[in-house]
Image (tube, rainbow, N blue to C red; front, side, top):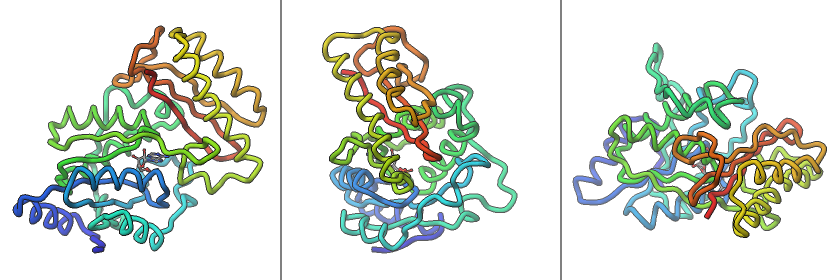
Length: 280
Ligand code: AMP
């Protein structure tokens, strides 16, 4: 498996394949790959003849007091996992490649980015929108694969792709969970055994909301207060948000419809975790 470090190499690789009539799928990641990322790589393989996994811990999506420096990095293991899942290349640029000296252009949305995670992480989605746009412009993929795990991010990326007329199809894959229900996340390595038990309140809440919804409950106030009750039973969990929103606009909806996004975020110790479900 080849490792590419520059935008020029990535673009040359993708264009050469397209010239041969092949297809390219991009799986953007920040590394520390786990089974959730593996599922995205498999979905990419099922759709395109060649898969590029980007590994880039994007500094612009971290706030000044967030965990950019301690974000887990595991490049060797990541290459092994991506290769085993059938990726053709890894794109792992240095920061200066994606943000050259004097860089002054960002992708800023006029809506969406101040909602959910954007409300508690100012600037986060601006960084996400910018790096994803750059990756899509550089790799020119037929498809880009994202996880529903970061559901608000999906809404932002769909908006950016539509607004910038980017030709890539956005594919969204289901959340992969550990056997105890916890949604896989690169940040789970930060959880102590006790924190891990506390973190299970997130997936427990998602299951409860899914059950209430399946039994016909559609009201936001009832779903949100039931969710908050489960989460507050775990005293060391600090809830950031619990929300029922339209998945495209991230605006609250009073009554759930099929496709509504129920999303939550909470801190366990210093670690911020998210989870969600798309209601049937
Ligand atoms: P990250 O490396 O955390 O930036 O994530 C890269 C991609 O993997 C994003 O599209 C995430 O939504 C996706 N992802 C992360 N965790 C999971 C998971 N547990 N299940 C499915 N996709 C995931």
